[in-house]
Amino acid sequence: MTTRSQRAAQREQTRRTLLRESRRLFAAHGYAAVGLAEIVRAAGVTKGALYHHFDSKAELFRAVLEQVQQEVGERVAATADAQDDPWAQLVAGCHAFLAASADPDVQQIMLIDGPAVLGWAEWRTLDEATSARHLAEALTTLMAAGTIVEQPVAPLTRLLSGAMNEAALWLAASADPGDLAATQAALSRLLESLRA
Amino acid sequence: MTTRSQRAAQREQTRRTLLRESRRLFAAHGYAAVGLAEIVRAAGVTKGALYHHFDSKAELFRAVLEQVQQEVGERVAATADAQDDPWAQLVAGCHAFLAASADPDVQQIMLIDGPAVLGWAEWRTLDEATSARHLAEALTTLMAAGTIVEQPVAPLTRLLSGAMNEAALWLAASADPGDLAATQAALSRLLESLRA
DNA sequence: TAGTTCGCATACCGTTGGTATGTCAAAGGG
DNA sequence: CCCTTTGACATACCAACGGTATGCGAACTA
Image 1 (tube, rainbow over the protein chains, first blue to last red):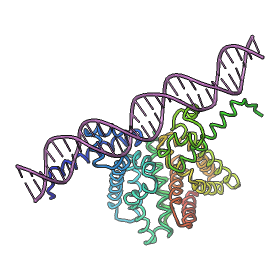
Image 2 (image 1 turned 30 degrees about the vertical axis):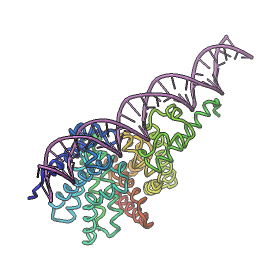
Image 3 (image 1 turned 90 degrees about the vertical axis):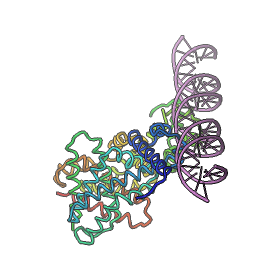
Image 4 (image 1 turned 60 degrees about the horizontal axis):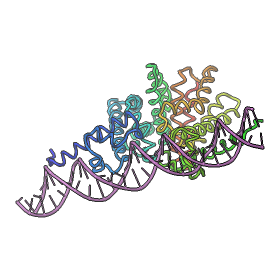
């Protein structure tokens, strides 16, 4: 166990509160529509505290995005690892990603504001480090095993990742609950086409 | 021919200049990084002129986005219509979309800032009205003809549209020129899997 | 326990998107 | 042809925002 000083504990507490409240507000109203004043008011601190923990509004958002990406990546990995067959891992992982992206936090923060606030290049770096990484690894494994046809992994990863991102956003705006099943079916068909 | 008054001509000229310059700046630096002062300076007018033509900065962006979407849609349609076979139209249209999305204007304005500035719902309305519409129509035609397997069009359209959007962004950041060919090949394989 | 650090509050600033008002030339009726 | 009205802007201004500089008191350290 880590013996933490009283100050370190307080610091961590404040930082977590700021992350929690800003995440809630960013997810609810979007990055641009949330002012720092609103964030610090919700967190019960002042702007001084915020800038003591984060260099800018964008970096606060970055920390929030990292947290969201981490959670999505873990959910995908957990679902995939529950399968034993590599092919089943791919399919289950993709469906888990689609389910995880149904969360409004994920929608607004990870899919909408993320690329616009940090720039696409930086967003993609985070994406690759967490959620999209599992997809690329699964595809590589399946290619090595000869289960799916040999081809460059990177473009295929991007195609599939983008397909799921967009589908998740569409599902969120959809009223018909049957759309989820239809999307999963269409996605499964696309994945099936990869088989050698 | 439309006889235009001197004032109407001047008005149109100013509006076009504002659209041209703001599009250039939005594409180059992103929506958030461009101030209205910079736009009106580049256009040679004042903020009064800008607000006489557009209700807000977001609406100016919206007009720019509509223009970009329109152009992409026309390019896709033109390429697709040059083919006679419906299946060839689909494939050619998809490849044309990928090529059109290589334009930096399209990247930043249509794919990055668009959803963040206007919200995803409104962005998708514009997308559906222009570029994505052709994709949905092509899929519908091919299903009716029995060329591709019968299934709901909407989710498949979103999956493919998202796949191409993301792939285009990835291609822009890519250094290897062979990545385009690899992406087109992977996309073609995915499309091929739709055949009945 | 005296001095230092540090987590945060307070006060302040430049810039930004947005608005209210002024201005002057073109349009239009008599 | 003149007089009034309209409209396409320019000018001046404002509140709010992100960001910074400084102050302060409690927790650590020697």
